[in-house]
Amino acid sequence: MAQRDYSRDQRGDCKQVCIALIVTQCGMQLGYEVFAGNTADVTTVQQIVEGIEEKYGKSNRIWGMDRVMTSADNLQFLRQENRRYIIGTNKSLLKKFEQESLKENWNTIRDGLEVKLCSLPSEEGESDMPESSEILILCRSRDRKLKDQGIVQRAADKNAARLTTMTERCEKPNRDPLLVSREIGRLFGQNTRGSHLFDVKVVPKDSDKNKGYAKIEWQKIKLATDWHELSNGCYLLRTNVMDRTDEELWKAYIQLTESEDAFRI
View: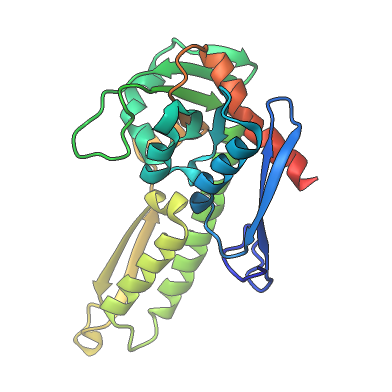
């Protein structure tokens, strides 16, 4: 079962297995499954849920899952037989709540953490949009904001260092503009969180002698209205549990983090 695949520990040279751990609300272990090391997390949901239901029965439990477990097929499966869930949502959906995040009607759970319930009508053609039977919990965390800012800064530093090196390399002959543009595209693809902070142009060199060769002009910018900065520390949850407050829903979901911490120990 040990296979090489994407490694969260940045150890792609090592074989690994995937372990799914299921715990109760108070942290008691119900069970676990071992999967091959090249198993995608999102493909394990149905097997885990059905296994727990077969072993312990179908009670009125609430399934909490991170956004990496979210897919259209998994959501359809969970909605069957009225299963209840609280799951993370893709960060791209946050942009639709830009105006909501600017309002002051946040509920403070504790120092540095605020939540609010939101609703968003389903829009035709967008498969990631919530169902009418769902509500969303918009969350804003100071600790998470510092973490997000650190991630963006590290990505920006990597981009700046690589752009400096690439600019110096363009001083040499035979640097084709198309190949340079592709190299920049790969760079920003690897460090997407910091790519919006740069204005980059690939232009031909001026002299006839160097015609057809490229040089890079780039600068770091600060956008006047930076959604990336505003959204740092924010995340969105979706749930079909309608009989709990925003605080109760957040506390139920955050048990994922507590379980992950215990799992690492």
